[in-house]
Length: 293
Ligand SMILES: Nc1ncnc2c1ncn2[C@@H]1O[C@H](COP(=O)(O)OP(=O)(O)OP(=O)(O)O)[C@@H](O)[C@H]1O
Image (cartoon, rainbow, N blue to C red; front, side):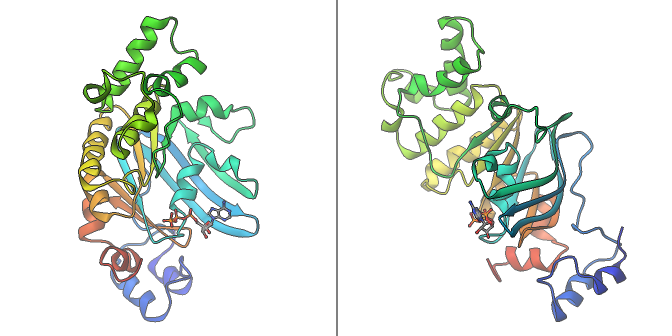
């Protein structure tokens, strides 16, 4: 545990210098650890401890520790290049696909260390699903987009069970009434917003525990965005959701906790309403008030 004096003499975040150091520290009235606010929760679904991520020699994530709670939406915000997507992609080992990327520290899903050599990433990515910035349906029918995951994971025993999973997943994603009469048509024939809900249905179909969303609305218009946001609120009752977003209004609408990243550091974490109305760290305040980013 650092004291405020330590923080002045050993700034945790190199970007804070001179006047900014003083201003940041004067806003703090208690000793603090490296990240401002409490990044931990009582009953975490996922725990991340001392996580560093390097691309070759370059350090993109610096000693980040944070929990993901059950049934919460955790928003990750911060300026472009601060490492939000990199950190998000650590949570289901998507970064394994980048050869220069090295992840150290510990990330657990319940009791399982997801970076343990024995972990098979295919079932891991079913338990920790992902929805990308740009909707990416498979070049298959609407039905097959949803049925593919349950089939390869052996989650259903017969066609009737598969039909049931397809229907339930599309209902949960709020898409069933729009597509129930065109299940054999290509997923790519849907509108952008419908495609994104199809991708969410595809993630849901394999019974995930956590859903990662990387700017899921950035390619969508305001109406499609509103539908996805409503959906996120509903999905929270069953899943944990971690969302990266540039839209601060969106973070404030959909999330219960917000984590602010800057230059690979997790600067501040807290209840979303506090982060947006009373941030403790100067860098957080500068970002949410639009002074940079
Ligand atoms: N595949 C990669 N190879 C090398 N460096 C990468 C790779 N992906 C990301 N980086 C670097 O890691 C740092 C963090 O990038 P990242 O995409 O995680 O940031 P971000 O906060 O999600 O940005 P944005 O909001 O612009 O999407 C950046 O310096 C970026 O250039």
